[in-house]
Image 1 (cartoon, rainbow, N blue to C red):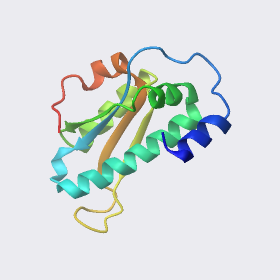
Image 2 (image 1 turned 90 degrees about the vertical axis):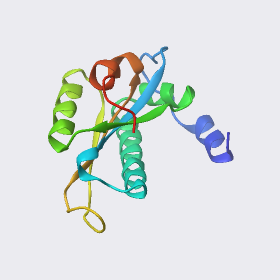
Image 3 (image 1 turned 90 degrees about the horizontal axis):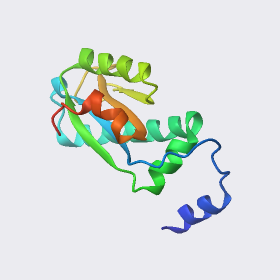
Image 4 (image 1 turned 45 degrees about the vertical axis):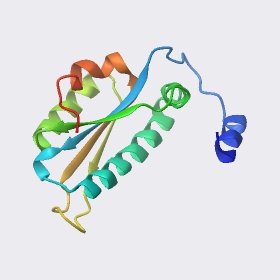
Length: 138
């Protein structure tokens, strides 16, 4: 654990509510229809990770704490296109799974506003299985 992580752990307020005990993870659904390069995908997933962590810190700090404490598991899977990501996002919200979407600024490979990444979680693994279990790993 780094010094900053240690200081944060010692000084941050403890999350209220029930901290999940099960396996936790975060899933990034990549819009495979955009044919992004590897570096572009990495950058977009990075944006998604930051947004998802900030979102969880605000809306579900207990889940964030559990995810951080259990190794920050994350996976990337292939989504068909923007419509597929939108459908998954709606399903996730109905299941009370945290979501964060990334839309590209359009400075490099793809058009501005393109839906590139859907970040799901952090949450308990079983919550994501029905949403992303059938999707292929990136």
